[in-house]
Image (tube, rainbow, N blue to C red; front, side, top):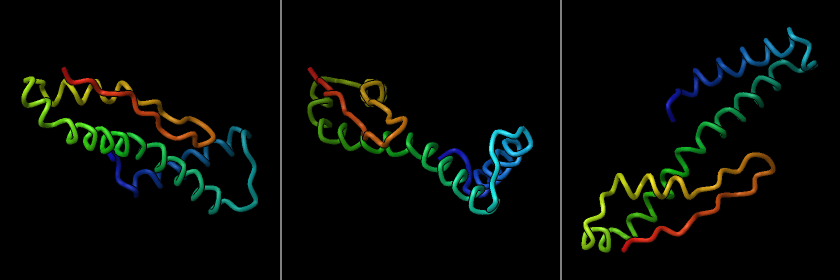
Length: 102
């Protein structure tokens, strides 16, 4: 993840503060609200890490074919990333497109 958990916690607290000041939200338990917002930020920001790891696993499965065909890892990694569907709400999961190595 590009940000530390401490910084994400700070962002969560600042976000809640601004939402309350703008009267977008109201809460009786500020600490819990800040923790929930921070956790949501962590989950969203760590999504990229999980997708990158899944692409690496897929590419490892095709490593021999890639070596034989002369495919470049970086190029295939980009193709693998573009084939993912990011879950946005409802936690639908991640769909993986097939990676073809010819």
